[in-house]
Image (cartoon, rainbow, N blue to C red; front, side):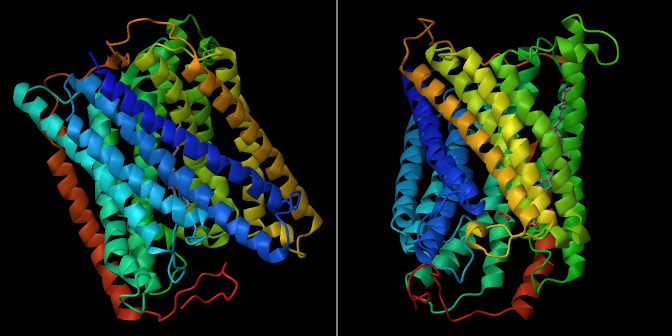
Length: 554
Ligand code: HAS
C-alpha cells in the first residue's frame, strides 16, 4: 500500500511525542523508586513530599495517558490504511493531532507549575487548575476525531467492497476504538459537568464518590485501550516474525469482539472498598471482571499454538524442543515475547485483584503498582517500543541502529520489571501502601527496607533498559535510510493456519450489534450503581491541594 509522506510523517510525530513523554515519565519513575527506598532524598520533608507527588503525577499522566494515546492513534492510522488499502481523511488527521497537542500542552503546563498535583486519577476533592481538566478533555476529543475518521474510512471501504469481511487487523482497530469511545464517555461527563465548573468556581461543592465512579467507568476499560493494540501486534505481526502462522484467525476475531462486551462494565472492581455502592453490584462487576479475563486466556492458547507451529516449522520437535527453535535473538521477537511472558504474571495478579475478598488485602498497597508495571508497563509499553522500531523500518526504511541493543534492551527490561514487581507485590502483601513517600517514613522494618531495595534494583534495571532503547531509537531516527524507496508500506500481517472464510456468520462482522450489547450491559450494571451513589453519597464543599503550603486552597 502506498502511504503518503504526510501520513508517515504525522505518524512519526505521534510516536515521537509519545516516546518523549515516556522518557520524561520514566525518569520520574526512577526518582520515585529510589526515594521510596530512602536511597535518594528529594530535599526537606515539605519540599520532598511536594516534588514526590508532582513527579508521581507526571509519571502517571505522561506514561499512562499521553504516551499511550499518541502512540496508539498513530499506530492505528497505519494499520487502518495498510489493511483497508484506503486513505484516511487528511484534514481530520491534522485536526485530531493538533487538538491532542494543545490539550497535552495545557495539562503539562498545569502539572509542571504544581497547579495540578492530583495524580493521574485526579480524585476530587483534590483540585487541579482548570487548564489541566480542559487539556485532558482536548486530548480525548482529539482521539475521538481519529475514531470518527477511522469509522468513516471503514464505511467507505464497506460500500466499495460489498460482502467482503473486515480484515482481521481492522477488527482489532475497531475493538480498541469502541472500548475507548464508550469508556471516555464516563470521564467526559465527570470532567465537563463536575470538575471544570468546580475548578472554575462556578459550583462550590463536589461529590467525590460520584466523580470516582465516573472515573472508573473510564479507568478500567482504559487498560484494554492500552492492551488491544499490543494484542493486535501479537496476533497479526508476531507469528510471521517467528516464522509461522496465526493458529486461528476466527478465534482472534471472537476475542476482540469479546473485549467490546466485557471491558466496560467492570470499573467498580476498583471501588470494592468504596462506601455507597451495594455489595451485590460490586459482586456482579467482579463476576464480569472474570469474564474479561476469558479473551486473554483464549489469546494465551491461540498464541502459544501459533508459536509452537513456528517452532516446529523451524525444525523443533518433542514436547518442548520447538521453544528452543524460536528466534530469540531477533529484536522484534524479543520485544514481543518478553512482554507476553511478563503478561502471564500480570494477568494472574489481575485475577487476584478481581477476587472481591482478596482485593481487601491488596487494594491501595504496593501490590497494585506491581500489577500494573507487568501489564501496561510491560505488556503494552514494551510492545509499543518494539513497534516503534518496526515502524521506523516500514515507514522510513531505517532498521535499528543496533539490532543487538534492541534485543538486549527487551530482555533487560523483562528482568528489571520482574524484580521490581516482585518486590512491590511482597511489600503490598505486607500492607505497605502505594503512592507514599516511604523514604521519609520512620516505621519501615528491616524486611520492608530490603524489599524496597530489591524494588529499587529492578527500577534501576528498567531505567537502564529504557536508556539503551532511547539512545538506540534516536540513533535510528537520525541515521540514513537502509532502504531507499519506502512509499510502499507493508506491515507483513501474518497468514493464518485456520483462516476465516466467507461462511463466517455475518454477526461476527457487524460491530453495531456488539457495541449495542456493550451499551446494554453498561446500562444494566451501572444503572443500579449510580442509583446507589445518588441515594447514599453527597457533595462536599471543600477543594484541597495538599501540596500547597496552607493545605486548603478554598
Ligand atoms: Fe488490572 C488495577 C484486574 C489486566 C492495568 N490494572 C489496575 C491498575 C492498572 C491496571 C493501571 O480487579 C491500577 C489502577 C489504579 O491506579 O488504581 N487487571 C485486572 C484483571 C485483568 C487486568 C482481571 N490491568 C490489566 C491490563 C492492564 C491493567 C491488561 C493494562 C494494560 N486490575 C484489576 C483490578 C484492579 C486492577 C481488580 C484494581 C485493584 C485495586 O484494588 O485497586 C485481566 O484482564 C488479566 C487477564 C490476563 C491473563 C493473562 C493472559 C496471558 C497472555 C500471555 C500469553 C503468553 C504466551 C507466551 C502465549 C489471563 C495473553 C508463551 C511463551 C512461550 C515461550 C511459548
